[in-house]
Length: 326
Image (cartoon, rainbow, N blue to C red; front, side):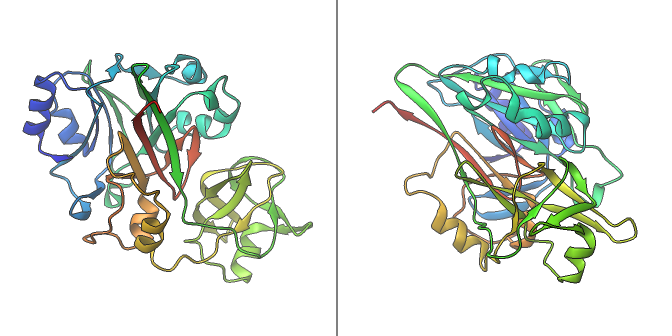
């Protein structure tokens, strides 16, 4: 739902629990209530891709569910999110981009206790690209009207035994048949790598091959294809920076070109998934796929600086559906 501040106020007045995405000034105008939010001005709406500083994207918690009070997580507590996520239900987690907690979660979440036994999705808040260096990504705890640039906020949603939540990802990227790339250490940047077992400077390798930095590196994690998007090639330093961490010893390949982003997403989204409880996609897909003003048929939601499906993802559509138990 793409709403004005007044429409959001009306939903809260009716006792709704909400997950909100919008510009900082708009979120600060939302009254106290059962909601969490994060800053972002890019969205996929029923009218197509939109960049808006005037409206908020609203994802209500299903009526049959119960949302606990929002939880604010810091560096010392984020590892407990798997333990605190409901056994039957789901958790929406929002982290501010470029923060220490964003990096810690990205690197360490796969080792958190019970993380993959729960249903944990979410996204990374950001800002308008014109505001980089002028504003900071924020997350909001609506129950206290507080915002944070160094903490995460989560909404734990409990479901009745008659229903279950399911998290899924839609990744339109596949690894090419090209070189196998590995890195000697994990992190958000890399100098050295091995290419088919030969040690190389990754930036020099990437530039010399004239590879397309809009395509992510792709690795197979136990059957799930996980992307690592390239943020910057710094030829002066011989360093490549990423939007998500590369992991030591994992084999990566550059993705194949995708052609039409809308067509690939539409073909990849499972039939019947049209009104999920939560959905988000990546701002890089929004930009590289030129989705603004295009009616794509994609699932609606914020276009974010990173997606969370248990662990941090890039250039991936994430959605959570709530369905009756078969």
